Image 1 (tube, one colour):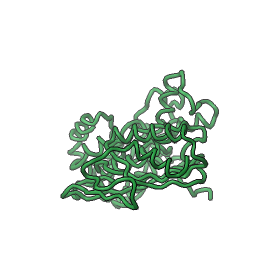
Image 2 (image 1 turned 60 degrees about the vertical axis):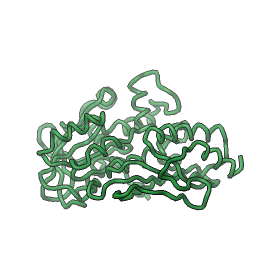
Image 3 (image 1 turned 90 degrees about the horizontal axis):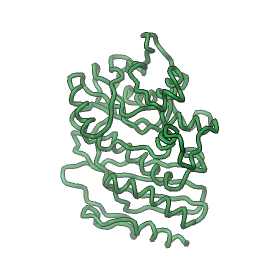
Image 4 (image 1 turned 30 degrees about the vertical axis):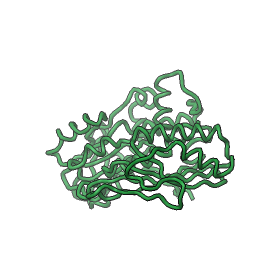
Length: 326
């Protein structure tokens, strides 16, 4: 395929919407946000061999390319609306492209987000999405809204994606094929096809005081909330949820570094007043997502963990940093 055939093939997968005055095919898209809403915009880039193993199936690459952006919208309590896609491809393989588009549009359709433009170029495999959504200005879940005394919550089971990556690095998990072992397949899915918590983000409007998505590690990401809000977090390792996969492949203390410092979870970590405890549980139930209270915020600085005996515990790794070893 030439470049324009590639663009046409992707454009054919999109659908018309009333809030898209002009979509793919011009120099810019023309979009119409609803009255009374503010625009939330985020962008993420995924590079082969950095954000996913080179042998990752194209469907899963397409899914994850959009999922990481949807997770940012979820953390702001923003409703997904539109996105653009920039593709750098080593060659224009139509079979790979169709599988990639299948993954991206499977998630896009489920999330209610529409592709409105982008760019294509030849080069090392790299994928960039800019995602846009809207939220009432007074209900955006910002990082600087937390208060002393707020409870700290996390959705899902942090650490499963990091465990999957560790097992792949050890040669114990093949990310390119469905696994016969159901627990290994669960971990493979958690790494390759994260589930952005958009329904939870919407349900937490007016309840949560601050939020962030967990992409670089629970401790590191919560640290950004603490820094922006001028607070410290006191967290309990015993309160972290443990899944059957974690219990089997990283039992007990082995799971703690994965859960506190592993990346790629794309869960939500958020704070809420203690008086809103039951409202948080009700919001999570309405979104179909499990949440766990893992500690609280207080005066001070930093993120502090306690082991089940109440002793301070220092994570061996704070979180992922692209330039830590540069």
